[in-house]
Image (cartoon, rainbow, N blue to C red):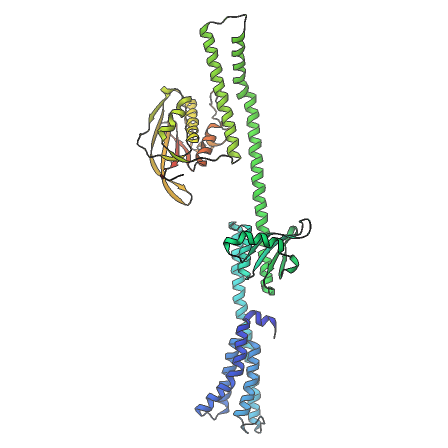
Length: 490
């Protein structure tokens, strides 16, 4: 018997077919004897129906056995002389000859049809699997470990391992997926990495870059081996995609680092040198022994030193904070914070007469890091102070809408900083949050354009949103939205 028949129909189904081929012919003959049939033609048709039934169940080889056995049963029980395999009537001989020819032909046709049907079903399943693989490549859903577990489940093997031939000392498994319980998977995988051998694998698939996909537990048939090749191709595409993502992230970090270095050089060349020069000039004037300055001038020089020192401090802090944000080195300590609690510290760098606070004192707290939120509001206020002209800056707050927290939406609190300066165009609403962006009409000493970028970065790290929109009548409104505190430990 060919292995193809077994692989397509299954051993159980073929075994049932052989059992029917032995049992069905005498059973049908006994049935015809019980009802009193005397016509050989009727017996032949009944036996032919039995052969077709065996062919449908077990395929070609059980049907051929049924055809031969049915011929012997008909010869022994239905042709003269009954009880003997001898045939005396030429017509009976012709009938039996035609029967066995038709039975064999029907067996071939029905068996071939059953095989084609099984092949079509297997091809459909294979196409569905390949479609799922293609979808997985496009959607980039699988991790490498999860993908190996998917291979193990699909092919019903006990262990799947990915070997690297380039590892010094011979091939070593880099990833393992086994049939161990999920809780013990990590420890079992580590043990198996030391015990698995590429030579002991039942089926292997060679991949580019010296990698080998190895399956343990059973040997795959040719059709499954072809499907394993498709799995291997997707695994290669997945690794290439992961390497591309890593390379893209590295390039992005390099680009951001270069941008940061360029900005620092620009800051050193202008934004740092200008206040440093002012501080040095003021200090030199105060220390000049030959000239005794009046008290008012001394006070003015000291104020200049203080102002330039504050400007330098803000600039350095923004540069350091932006560096931490781009390096993912910021960890917020969230707790319940009221908006009004962060305003005194945030307003320290803005002239008091410029700001009008209209935040209700009974607003519920938001989940935030107090220091980060104070810095966010301070940076926004300093930016508004630079560009608002002579108009007042208004701070208002409310419970406003929802915000996405993980997989669900939660109520949010909102703080609005409103100015009535020149404002921005609709196309510039997002660009103002990019690092090192400054308006064309930025006043002297306005910094390197990091204030709003740091504010947005801190807001998003805390799980919030910072958006900009035009103020009706002219100006800019910045909205800080954060999830309301739940009362539980954040």
